[in-house]
Image 1 (cartoon, helix red, strand yellow):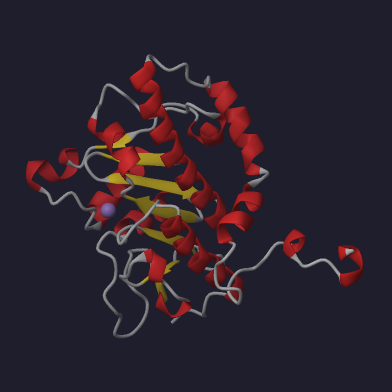
Image 2 (image 1 turned 30 degrees about the horizontal axis):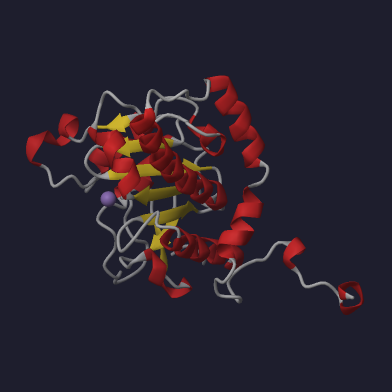
Length: 255
Ligand code: MN
């Protein structure tokens, strides 16, 4: 048994679930996890429930093989191996988001049109986003889900050191060096997919160069907390760690 997740990290993960649900990154399906900040081989994720309904009591620890680390565990997500195998392969990744958001699906389905950064908020994409082809690892009759370690490891290899991997006919998996960065990237990956589809209807898009994308991404990384403060607004007051700028002004300063 590992010690409970510190209250602040737990609140961050619960809030991430709610934000992703509110912004349409996930619906009844999809999930987000956090690598244990003290035990790098473990991670934390909700039991099998819609992310918008996750509370702190739903979050449980998993070991490096994606097995729940509690006695008599509740039902857990079938695709937890996505998380465990990415954490195993990529030590810098601290958080993983898995999404089925509709705008990203066309870019997994049409091999001749890669997802690329079409606006500065998705600069972190840098260049063509890799696509995971489950048929290469599970044949032509899988149910499309990453149901075991082998498929999780294949997905992690396709992701490599990139921030996002598309999954053909399924969705995408997005990683970050914090929960906030993973959520930020997930939100803007979907915005980029929507905008790129719009642009493609008008004509051949003029994409960001890798240098423009890298610079824009580095700049945006400094302002993730601003987005988080907005997106977390309205979440359970007792759970959300508000940034200092969110504190109410003293009475004397209000006049
Ligand atoms: Mn899935």
